[in-house]
Amino acid sequence: MDSVWFSKPRPSSGQPLGLSREAIVRKALEVLDEHGMQKLSMRKLAAELGAAPMSLYWHVPTKDALVELCIDAVYGEMEPPDADVDWETALRGMMHSLRHLALRHPWWIRIIGEYMSIGPNAVGMADSMLEPMRTAGLSAVEASQSVSTMSSFVIGFAVAEVNFNNRGRLDIAPPDVARFADLYRERFPRYVEMMNEPALWSLDRQFEFGLDCVINGIKASVAALR
Image: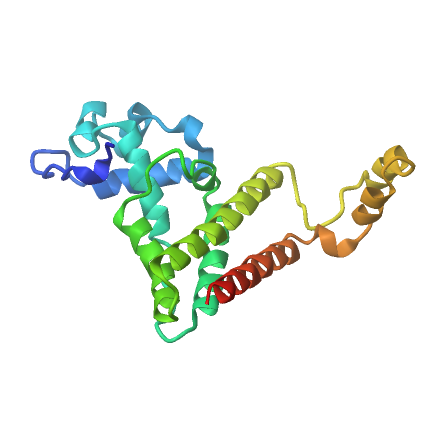
């Protein structure tokens, strides 16, 4: 297992003024947010920073290492829950924050799982979610499985939402619903009926419903083990 987090950054002495690991990550985040992973290259990044390409490798050993750093920087945007709230309130708030991060940084949510998320911000975020559950009396296994299940739901939902958003707004019914209904009304009447329900075209409502289902499921599962 290799990761940028297992090595220490080199000192910035002798490098161009203003060039540092932090500056490189900030510029990389700008590129990723605007253009996505496909447009991120060390050479282009160096040009935007006004530095020689090889000087970036003094601070960041590889492009993959840079992506790891950027992933963790995004995790750093999450606000930890208040110390005095119950675990459900804490996790619900953090899951909303996770979804908002995905919409703000589409490239980020698409590569969750492809790179290691063991930076201080990612681990700190996980610890912040585990803390209220452990305080409430859940075991380490129960808390970890609960957080993993909730995060998996949000990541899956957010990936689909980000991808769909690239094709336009989804909080309104698409203009060709009637044509779709005409195509399938006889063969799949229940599906056509579903498409005509306005509530189902609200992603916010869909997200809340799914979150409620996961939280209620965790409560029931934990209660059954007691």
